[in-house]
Amino acid sequence: MKIRDIIAAMMLLVGFVANANQPKYVFYFIGDGMGMGHVMAAQTYNRVVLGNDQPLLMMQFPVVSWAMTYSATGPITDSAAAGTALATGHKTLNGMIGVTPDTTAVQSIASQLHDMGYGVGIITTVAPDDATPSAFYAHQPSRKMKYEIGLDAAASGFELIGGSRIYGFTKNGVDTDLMKVFNDSNITIARGLDELSAATTERVYLVNPEGITSGNVGYTIDSVPGALTLPGMTRAAIAHLQKTSPDRFFLMAEGGNIDYAGHSNDGATVVKEIINFNEAIAVAYEFYLTHPDETLIVVTADHDTGGLAIGFPLSGYSGWINNIQYQRISKDRLGDYCKTLLNSRRIYTWEDMKAELSDKLGFWSHINIPAEDEQLLQEKFDITFNQRAGKDEQTLYNDFNEFTVTVFKVMDKATGIKWTTTGHAGNPVPVFAIGVGADLFKNLNNNIEIPNKIRTITGIK
Image 1 (tube, rainbow, N blue to C red):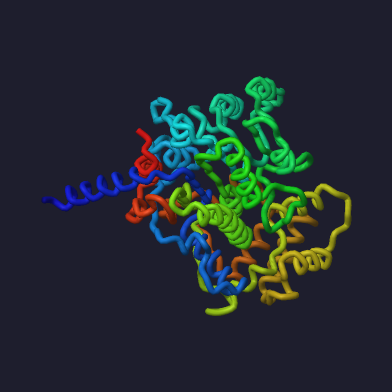
Image 2: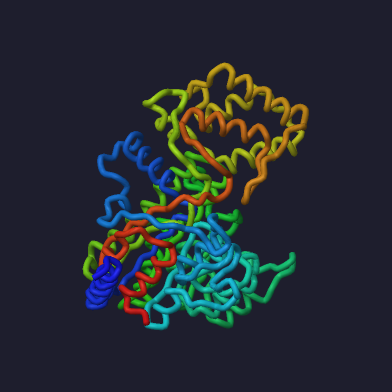
């Protein structure tokens, strides 16, 4: 018998065993942009700075593997094609949601499980009509079609969809009828976790509280008061699904902020987002411990953002990771602060900025800044704030002035974080699993195989 025939027979046997004990509760965690370098940077921080003897919880799961992420477009996928692959088991072109390259709609595992009687929750730390979450309920030729994606959300029947804000309420600057569609579908818009717990309808669309309007829920490192967090959303989603669908449910939880921070090349923010993502997994793991024979948890990523690697820092072979703890502001928020200064009439000196960098990033107060780097920072400060001649760097979700870019290059030198791009990378991504049928994920995975394996385990036809 040929080896491929043996493997096929073993896979069928595993599938048969899995079907004999199908999970009632399925958790699917997707760290958007979370490459292997990102996880290792977070684990090093977890060990060295936080002092934890045990690795990150997801790294302790019995199944530790990896997955390839290429799309039908080429070696580098975007979140729409990758989300579609992870949700439906089909490769598609970058930018497409829930359809094949010829725009034929394909059903997600979330939708199929819903048809089987599972309650379904889709939550994310970015917009719920963004690429990855929408791949679980929408079918559109472009991820930019937010209104149409919103209509698909209403038609999905899912019990919970949540994230930062809903872009489909406006189209070309004009209000749409999407709110009316939601009302007609008996969907409650819950602004924050308190409103979610108080909701009387089975179907809820969860968003950030009033006044928080950013594209994501807010970075962990920025500690935005009142903002949603993935651990809090995960706990609330489980409670809502236990109320509406106590016998069985499926929950997809996306750490979308990892991707945002990766595009910004902001190492400390990435690390703290992964720690936060791991805390959300811990919430599901608590549930697993009470239902170990009925639960499956799968953790993976849609792609690598930034090509992060741990390099050799100026501080030498030891001590570099400690510098991450002194950063208390994301690159995005520091960039916004600098934009505010540029638009104001305030006289802002280099000494003022040095005090700000000392307070928010630990420069000089905790991190030694070499004289040549301080001179470079001062030169970029003068070009940006006095001469008003600085050049902006464009990334997917933000643009940064020349001074902010230089600040974080100096921070990278102090921490040893290295980047290959501000876009996506073609690197493989990790896969972690525990629970009913988890062994099916042990080998090298193509991303389209992950939902297909969930189909096998749950008995989706």
